[in-house]
Image 1: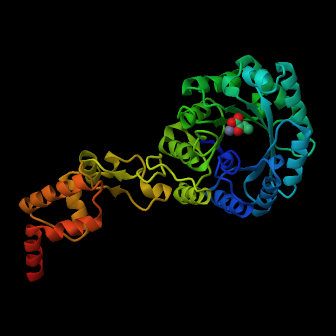
Image 2 (image 1 turned 90 degrees about the vertical axis):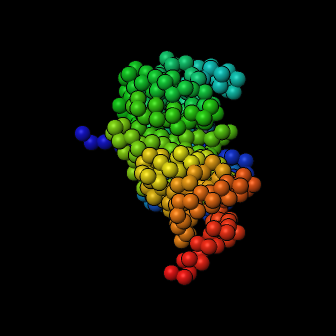
Length: 395
Ligand code: KIV
Ligand code: ZN
């Protein structure tokens, strides 16, 4: 049986770029968009044209710079927004308008000061209006994560009837737990009569650190598009991170899903986005953090050196990282120290190694990490090693 193709909708340049301090100029956005195209994303959300002339212009430039992915522009369910998005997408080979409105009672009451009936009508009108200009229309039911299920199902059915090709079910506030979010998608798949006429998309925020888990739960229950960003950047605690969802699909072949992403380009993209946006990646970030392939405790280092898969579920090269690293700290064991010294050209008999290890522990307690240059210092001051070196020279 063939695998289910999961569409990767990248919103680094829209939801990601909304983060304070992460704004990019048009040239920088074009550079990121070209890199996303090489990575193999299916959709690039290029911006929100009505938000500023700069954003409008960036969408225009991106439509001219890429040819393979769909280029998508965000709008509210408002004619002026849609008109500007249509203009900005004029040169796109594969344009998409992403329009929508709130679907939860809290948004309907306190954001739109409206009623369920009115927002439904406004959403449907927006889809119909956009459809006059662009064939591919994605509708977002904002805050679907907290919406009443029956009303959400009604909204999804109505916008598909109005011409939506993709319906986005965002967990805008990152409120859901994976089983809740998965059940929500399943309910829609089972209860919306025309659901087969559109692709269901998931757009999860990370307020509880569950964005990737929720997105995967959505995919396991029938969604076929996932909205994500490089390094998981995005509003507040961020969005589902592209590298996490792609590598979860790669590592779990039993899901029988595939994406068009070339994972070997992931690390390069992560560096590009973090550098351009001035947004450092936390060291323990899954897949792309500095420690994602670094082993530091003695037990782990020993196990890793015996067999990589003891402590790694993917190889660093799979995602474009050069190699795994062994970090020497006061928690490291003899195996790791020995391994590193051997890489530097030093091999000691067991008793001498014991003395070196004691010196190493003293040094490691003083300095947080013992680097190669520290090891050189360590072996230089040690009597035993001096002797050993002399022996080496003589032989
Ligand atoms: O989080 C959200 O609901 C959004 C929509 C605009 C899709 O970003
Ligand atoms: Zn969002």
